[in-house]
Length: 325
Length: 270
Image (cartoon, rainbow over all chains, first blue to last red; front, side):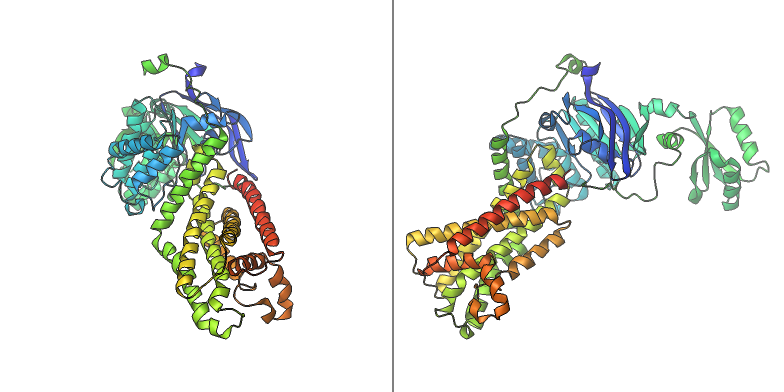
């Protein structure tokens, strides 16, 4: 049903100079659902968000958000969306309440209504107590919550969250997850980007995997997991020498490798016959493998299978894409 | 979920307020924001108020005795201090514009349909208000230490108009510089230019006491006609063509800065 889509993009392309950031991206997000755009640093996630939120213009392709064309009906799109970007969009020297009130005024609320809305959002995000202190005195997690709250002042139909939990500790991350889950239940459409598979798995109704400027996979978390072998055999190895030996024997079939903990994961269908055969193959002398466990495949395995490289890079730096022309 | 699919399939087409009306309201909101932030930025606020006063005391009491201008030096130097002060105040605008442009907040403003013009106009309006406050302070201190102008009400009005135009022009110029700079530190460099410009002019010493090679520049740079106009109006002296040249300079800088800002904003946010 065409009309039931909150976001619909076809063939989005964008280059910055000679760098091709988006290379024909198609996306469909039904109203009231949560889509996670999952990809490593530099995959083009932020660029996709900037195009859908009218901040950047695609070189080719079309996109409609909340039923309006992002180029022709830019102002209507802007009145129906909100964007919470990677970097906090808050004034450190204003209090939380003042930040929200300002956003309310800019969203077109009259003074008293903006004040009410600010108080309401502070209460909802458990920030009432801190609300009258300048934001510069707030913790990272509180700022992120305020940032999310600021995205809600105008009652957007479609909410864009660009890496909402990057750089947050576990507790703050869970607080953000709760907010997003709550929003999804209220009928708002949420488009979020993330480089954390766990996050996409937790929050999203559908996941689109972006790699090298293309959507390489798209489906529900369960569907994506089925695209690779359903199970993974984790081998815990006796020592470093054993680790090297097994790693060499499995070579291309390794889906997970952790030299620190001396564990290696390999895809399997989970049957006793195959597990036994695998164990015999990698460890004929029966000395290298200490323990093994069969796990359901995670999205990490999916990502590796789909893109040929792991999702989590050791460096968790922010996605950097050239700004400006 | 079922009531969602049953309801309207499109988001409602909201009434988009006219560009001009929302731009005006947004500019006011932005100006309020900038002023609130400036007030809380205590060290900057103090510097911007204390510096002009210190400079005036410095010129009047330390240098003034050695400078022969034909009038009491405090009377001679007030217009120069006012301009120095306006330049310094404006340079803070450059820094705050750059801070906005390099942080995440500009994306949020734009995604909320706040026009770039409103963001910049808010900064400029706040800059004008801040500068008027420091102008009042400079006049106050000047009166305390013996500044006795002989201007009539009309002269005062004209002087205020020229000063306001100068502040407006230099604030927009600062906004353009703020858009050009890639970091707040770089934008701070603008203060160097505007703090330096009044020195090779008639702001602090008569031009004919300077070496001849600099006369051409000093007599024709934009600060000099503004100074001469303010001084002439405040002291009831003949002003000649200074007001015309002052207004022409200010309008020229203003129009060019607004135009350049528009282009730069579009380039920076493309």
